[in-house]
Image (cartoon, rainbow, N blue to C red; front, side, top):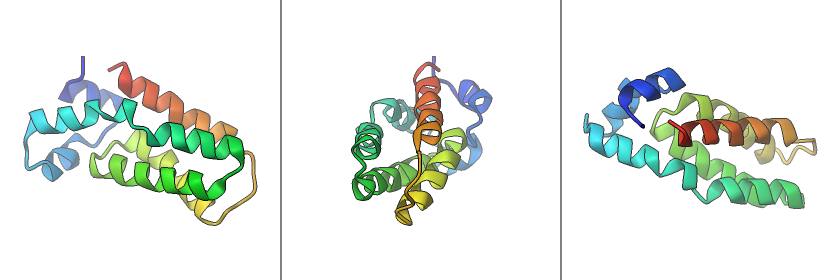
Length: 111
């Protein structure tokens, strides 16, 4: 079950995230509970698989904002990395980084 304690164990900066939600724990938890179903994860994956780095960048940039605002550090850090690589339109194999992001999204969904 998603709680402040499980988010702390996951590695989220709960104090910072709660601060952005004016200390409203229920709001913070409700917002986080929407992250695993966020469509931008699929858009990121699809963009990378199709070689559409522009579309993948847009999805990664959206995820960066969402995860950053909620202080979901385990997701945020690799998303920042992929966002900057995609911003530069770096031609590379994104498989490992994408896998990390999707695994951490799955972990969050299982809290």
